[in-house]
Image (cartoon, rainbow, N blue to C red; front, side):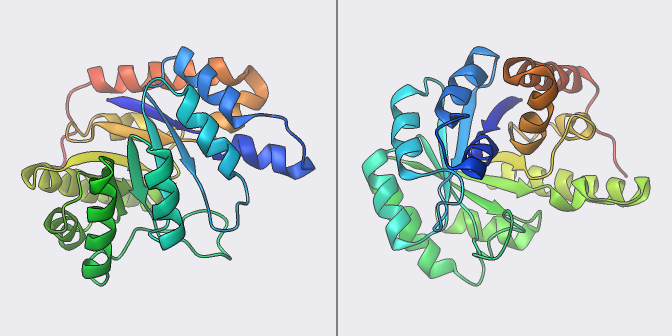
Amino acid sequence: MELSVNVDHVATVREARGGTQPDPVFAAMVAELAGATGVVCHLREDRRHINDRDVRLLREVVKTRLNLEMAPTEEMVAIAREVLPDIVTLVPERRQERTTEGGLNVVHQRHYLQTVVEMLHEADIRVSLFVEPVLEQIEAAADIGADIVELHTGHYANATSPEAARQELQRLHNAAEFARTMRLRVAAGHGLTYDNIVPICRIQAIEDVSIGHAIVARAVYVGFERAVRQMVELIRYGRLLPPLALS
């Protein structure tokens, strides 16, 4: 399993003062040196954290894999086709939300999203869709030509009891296995932390996890490089455990 580090909240800290520090581009380089195999950033319509300068510089400096999260809008598609990230992850976006709150409704936006996917493929960009662990949504993602699905792990991360967490793990496991039968690569993200990542690592069909806030939060205490290394080590440990056995 690979770790993609989301640097959005490094930019959030920067924007709190409106200056130049801390720099998410420098954080991305540190993350790669610490063992991350990808860097994620979300260019939002309101540019609340990552900005256009960040995206262009990240494309220049990232040596592993740059994943640009964005809403499927005309503006963002044009930027992606210019910058050429390795992967674009299409996400829903609402101006009033603090962070992305759920997956795309691919079923209801099938024809429009298919056009967006085709435009990105024309630029030789792989396309991931951020979706709920729902088989109907995953099947629709495959039908419109997506290369990857990123499963929304927020309900698992926010579970209030062991039984609720187990049920969400079951949903994620079933969704990941189904996605693999649809010949999709499988990633996962949202709300993953040092405390809840290991069970996710035991779902063998999940190949990549995207984690940002938890790493940035720990970096306040231990430094960014060490925070990334600790997550890399946890993921390696979790992957060594037997596959998750769920009934």
